[in-house]
Image (cartoon, rainbow, N blue to C red; front, side, top):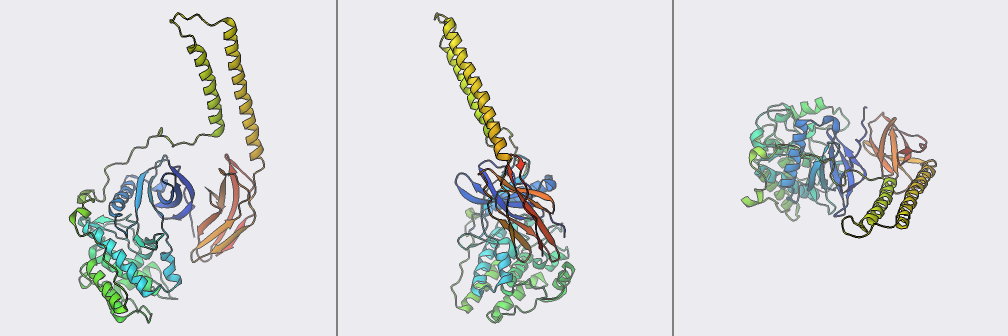
Length: 472
């Protein structure tokens, strides 16, 4: 299976790169540390090869939508958006866990927890609908979890306004959670199709699989599309899921849009009824009830459209890191310049003060000469120091590996790096530079994944480790 390495993380003013969090078709997500205020953040960066006017507008639309809607407690918070020095748009977002997208396949999540998650995410979707926005990609992997265990909806990358939704268009599809009318290109998304996706998502969290996935059977895209178009989802298969909840989800995933709950709020009320039947406290609905609370979203024409791309100022402070040897030399040269200016300003012209004596002039230029020699010796010493530290870089020792459902995680011990050193990880011969001492690669059954790791210092790469291979 063809895989791609994550793109090179951009240098962002005010942020320090840490490691890769994930990769998608249009963007990579990296972990950065924000310098002020100090906190860890997730930064979504567009891939350079896909950036064009259309994709850039889509990305900026996502930034605006999420910023305007992220005041909702169950929508991922966006802190800022901009364009990096190399021209790639990026979003700085709240750091959350994506573990729910894998957890539901590994373990049985309590019904009460699923209902709480479902109602909170449905409240977020209802809020977006009231602002005239469709999400169009509701699925388990787009539900993240905050540090305090609260679910939040992410990835409004293919969102659209309700006024645009009745015109079919090419959109990214997550087939197992897409309504039949969307898969048939009858619509690019409606409130009814979002109800279907919410029902399918809640079903998945309960069943441990998508609604039309057959355990042990063939589940290709064609198989799933055929089942979604013609079949009904099978029983969830859990004794603790009530018949009422099963009926609610079956109705939400009806083939006919008019047979589903009329809107997301109606689905929320049915989920709350299931909570009452279960004997747990009702999860409150989190929907803004006043018009001013939704007024942060602009008029319909501007909700998913951006008029231009912010200009990048290459001379902005913080765009380029200064190299320490150059900075040291610059400081010494500044001292020489100050010394010369002081010698001149001591006897300004045209003030009637007598010119300095020959002895004072000789002394001044002697001091200048001493300073110049200091610069030269300093530069020589710096060069010697760099050579002495780059000729003998530490070498990474044994690499360990672990596997999950669809990834391989490589890790290794720190061989004795300096603070500014980095690791060059080569996956199947392709290099990627990072700071973290672990590396994650996507994998599929039958893949053989091999890596080597080397320390990089001041542009010099040390000897690579022994190659570590995993047969997945």
